[in-house]
Amino acid sequence: MRLWPSQSERLELGQKTLKLLLPGCARLECHYPPKAIPSPSEAALPRTRPGVIYPRISVVVPSFNHGHFLGETLCSIVAQQYPDLQLLVVDGGSTDETADVISAYEKHIDWWVSEPDEGQANAINKGMAHASGDILAWLNSDDCLMPGALLRVAHSFMASPKPDVVYGHRVLINEEGLDVGKWILPGHRRFILGYADYIPQETMFWRKSLWLKSGGKLDESFRFAMDWELIQRFIKADARFKVIPAFLGQFRMHAAQKTSANIESDGFREMEIIRRACRESFSSQGALQNLYYLMQRASLFSFLLRARLTELLLKMKLINIH
Image (cartoon, rainbow, N blue to C red):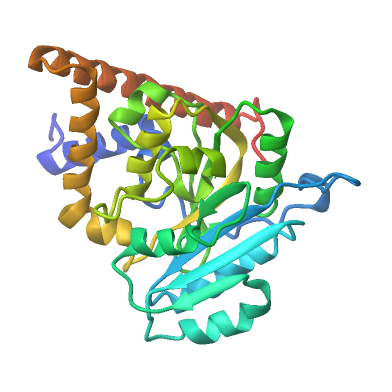
């Protein structure tokens, strides 16, 4: 009779405990068995308001050999039926079925190009150079928007002149487009954005005026964390951020995903570049930089606890997220 669990059993118990404590937004993995994303009823979706002039939203879709996902991405944008949408597709010269997919959606696309580029940031910059919208965003060619996302974004910007950047919660999907997890955020915490980027990129929209104020392009030296680097420039420009309490985007997890494939080759290095720059902007003294680093980690821990509490409140139906 064993009185103590084996090492492998202790390890398994530790992993289960960690998953119990960590919120979904700290785990880029399947949280539960795949299930279909429910089709929201018309009553649950935001509606256009009669007589209201909506701001133009420009969405850039960078793509390279993601033809098997691109159709779903473009469909999720077009199906929004947003009254003033500018759709821009920048393909890096794909050799798969991408050209056929673009042809199928060409009547909905305002501008597109298919030619070799110098990476994702370069492709997005090409598209943004043609963007005429008051509100800007990019959506990777393997991700999707949730139904009603663009109207929710527009209504948020129109309700107040204060927000410069808005973003929302994320649904994790698998290769088949099935729901396998949720990223639910407890609110905006600017301080920890110098240590960790918790903002779901596919849900983030910003004013063009902020984009121009912040340089008007992505830093093409970044191949993984270009969105986080952009957020740092938004912060330096005193941008005001707002979390929309709704699921705005779908982040697809798959074998060829850039997030997984590039995190070791580029991701960790670029993340450390951003963290170091934030510490150095706080102080030139090593001791104060270390203190700043410890304060960020403590703040992140508090953020994750609040995220877990938010998930539990949602599960108990004490709060509602569309």
